[in-house]
Image 1 (cartoon, rainbow, N blue to C red):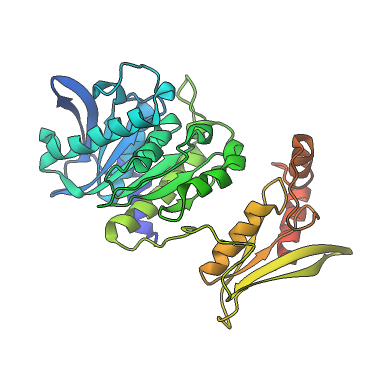
Image 2 (cartoon, rainbow, N blue to C red; image 1 turned 120 degrees about the vertical axis):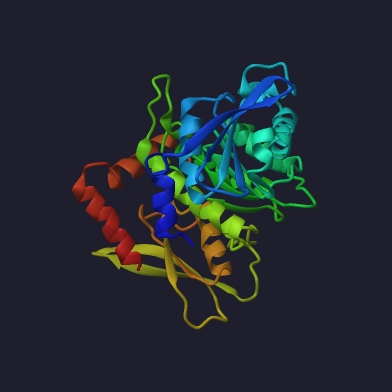
Length: 364
């Protein structure tokens, strides 16, 4: 689990560690990356390979690398176009095979480059990507690259791999952080990942990839900090061998395990009667309860799947029917979705925020 000391080390890495060193990584006289480490931290440590949204070395990726080494790791920001795997110059045009080949070369570089050999534990490798760089992480997993953990920040889900053949020697564990614009494609991604991929999902409530980076170097700093916190917790758990698998197997909602029971009920919000659903493991007499709040499409099939995920993990899972729609109904019309969002969740509108909270409390 997350520890406050790790959090402080992660978010304050740049200021707290004055011995941060950034060294060019050379292969065949080409600069293929930037090696970032804390010179005060001795011995071999886990390696974090970072692939930026452009595939190039940029300030945002280096800033992220400096923060991530706060968990006691080494980091390598790569230039995807210097590994001689493609003549293309736009990462968004790379094929899944080309992306995977580049990541595999980068993984190999952590074991062979002069500066890495005495600093990196080759048995503990993670790959982190942003935007199209996140697709490179998914591509590497899909094509059987050997690494321990992958983090895909705001991947372009419309271009993500549709099938996965994992490495036989090391099946990577994935943390996927889609932005809110691509949430509709998340269910398809999870189906494509299949039963063999161990993964977690942490949704970013932003409207552009890689935390709203633009040509002026601006980004949503609060989102980035939350993502870093989640990433540190995930990587620390993976490298320490205490990873909890959440959402690994897509539950069969139509024919669930015998012990998983689903029951519809009604509850009141003031004078309004709302439909709800509770899903639980009937063999557990007492358990922690989790209230699941739907996205703007209503309590659709994806939200129902989440109830079953939680029940499979031993929780009592309950729906919060924010929009007073039938359980299982999905709002497909974009104007109606925006209407749901505007009615209940408007930034700075305390009355609507209070009403949103009240409906969650009513479900409890």
